[in-house]
Every structure is written in C-alpha cells, then in structure tokens.
Length: 232
Image (cartoon, rainbow, N blue to C red; front, side, top):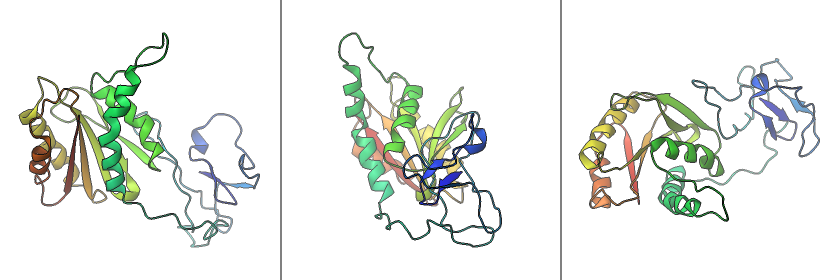
C-alpha cells in the first residue's frame, strides 16, 4: 500500500502495478509512504484471489502492527460515522433491480446492459459495491451445485459475506433452498464471517411469498446469521 502523510491511499496494489510509483499524493501533494518509518514494516495492500482484481480501497492502519508506532495520519481525520453495514447492504441490494431496469434502456444506439444470468449479476455488483463500501474482497469458489466457478463478495470490516443467485423457471424455491444450505455449510466454518447475505434476483417474481421465504431461509443456521434478500 502507498499512503500519503495525510492518510490518502494512493494505491493498495503498489507491487503489482506497472510504472513508477508516485512519490507524492495527487490530491494534497504530501509525501507518500509505503512502510513504517520506525521499523520499516511494509503496509499491507489488497489481496488477490484466483486472478481477480480487488475492488474498493483499503483504509490505512493508524498504527504499525509490527512496532506499534503511530503513522502520521493517525487521529488526524475526523472519526467516520458509524454505519450499519447490514442495513446499508440490504437497502442497496433491494434497490438493485431498479438500476438493472434503467440499464436496459439506453439512449440512441447504445447496447442495453441486461442481467441474464448470475455471472452478469456478479459483474454488476463487482462494479457497484465499492460505491457503498470500502475494502470489498472477492472470493472464487465452485460449490457442488454448479459446474462453474462463481464469485462471492467479502465485506471484511463488517464480517459479512455476500453470495448471489438468480431465480429462473428451472431454479426456483426448492433448488434455491438446497443451494443456500450448501452456502451456509461453507461459511459456518469461517471465524471471520459473522453473517451471510444471500441476494436472490427474481425479475419474473417466480418465488412465491418472498418475505415469508426470506424468514424461512434466515433460520437455516444457528451458528451464522443468515440474511436473505429476494429482490424483484
């Protein structure tokens, strides 16, 4: 990670970026640091996973985890407001279908963006989640119920994992519930995961009584908080 003396993150992919690293901040002009000036510990940047580029930007640490020395920006910035990440994510995902419908209708001869499968949904969330959250991590996994690798999202600061599904005429309530049971078993063993958010995009309204189904799915685990969202 490369951070200026005022705490602006210039890049969290310093060693994987091409070209010469910046020596000063492009926002305030302050000198850039990539390590603790007391002990030389290199500030940890973004993590890569299966060739996927990370999204969002990590916040710099206030103190060096190696020697405990305070970085120059520690306590300089006003405290960020406390945000209920789960409530924010819930509202964000329930409004997502509105954005998808808007992207279908574009001006002139511009091609429409359509969410036709889960991969389209994953790509859209990969682009949009950093608008609401910092440090969004990507996780590739291949659960038993699919033949392709899928992408889940990790909101590390909030201890939340997000997996997405799409209701189709072939995959409706029983099959979605079976998939969710596999997802729950996967994330129940994660010490850093306090909650699993499951987005089911249902553009055709195929899931009957969606709010009742959300309540039923939310009780699938006693060890992990499950938060299903059926968005139509």
